Image (cartoon, rainbow, N blue to C red; front, top):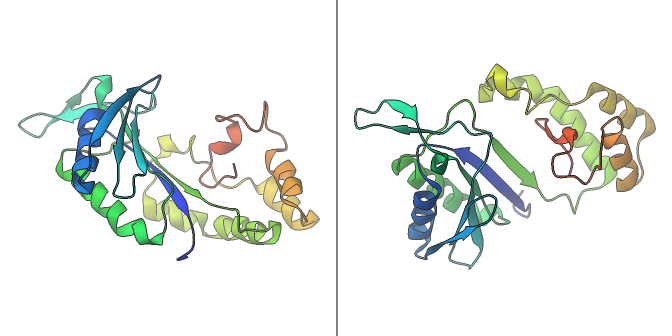
Length: 206
């Protein structure tokens, strides 16, 4: 656990991308900047010079709070997704505090918001990944209940493919390439594509 590298993407609204970037930069004692592009992104550096991106996400239903604390529809500036740099165990306290500071600044989530955690699999083998798939399948119902995943979000985080579990356990892949072939079997389009349909699961390989 202490050597595991990971990254995280956190979707939110209630705060503009510009303000979110400023909040992150202020916490780290640095500055933020506007990058633009198709995601109308902002950057904020941390103490190590790593970049935290603040991007737009079309799936977020944008809202903001009024002075009376009522939630109302907001413009697309309130579509805010935080994309962390590669993090380690030592960064967890900073990550938690960044989230707290964003909440204090007005950020909140609604049913359109999600979270993605990217785990570095470079030290894994086909056997350990097979075990991880089986473990996830066994604990999914408990995790989904604990996370209180809204029914309308299930299209983006479907449960582990039961056909995949059967194939992996029967064939016991010996290489990562063999495992990838099993993982993407039955999906359409280029499996390297960013929006390959296999990604819309609670647990997926990329």
